[in-house]
Amino acid sequence: MPRTTGPSKTVLVVEDEAAIRAMLRVALEIADYGCIEAKDAYEAQAVLADALPDLVLLDWMLPEVSGIELLRRWRRRAETHDLPVIMLTAKAEEESMIRGLEAGADDYVPKPFSPRELLARIKTILRRVDAAPAEAPISLGGLVMDPAARAVTIGGQLLGLGPTEYRLLEFFLTHQGRAYTRGQLLDNVWGGKVRIDERTIDVHIRRLRKALAPHGYADCVQTVRGYGYRFGRDSSAA
Image 1: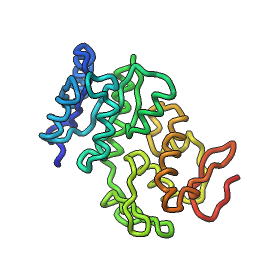
Image 2: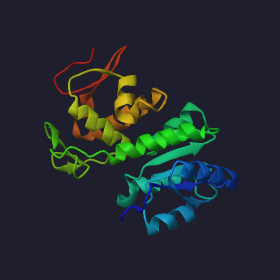
Image 3: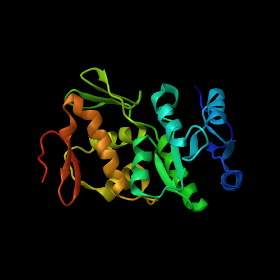
């Protein structure tokens, strides 16, 4: 399914509170983004049936079908699996953040939020999506990443990864053997201009290991105690 086209990127705002939708529309249009509004999951699905936006701002607490359930459905479908999504929620607890990220959100912004910071996060995610991937496949043993196809296989079997886990694995595969702090990983994978809690990286590390575990590659993601993480087959964790 093609993404929407036009002079600017298009953002779908899925939010049941009209005042918040109006505030986001103004902020997005001032920043030269197109804005489409949906007040619930059903309207959001109708928008996606027509054309994919470039990014979705998705409220957690939607009526009938929650935002997190809607996100899980999108991540199970091929056409929306890689759709960039920022979760908006009044749930600021760590457990809620982890649930949002584990459901497949690219970012998590608790309410109330600064429109300026939100726009910075949107810009960072869209810039990352637009970055041209390397053409040559990257491999480690039987694990092969094909950036052109945005696909990862192990022994010829397709590996199901969320968009953030894909980017994290891509960084690891292109920087094998070197230890990185959580802050360095956040700078390289999420972008240094956006403030994100460093605990976010641990959530995605767990998800990446879980995806690699059935194929015997979970131990490639090594914890370097007191420092951060390293990726590879030959180095042992410190």
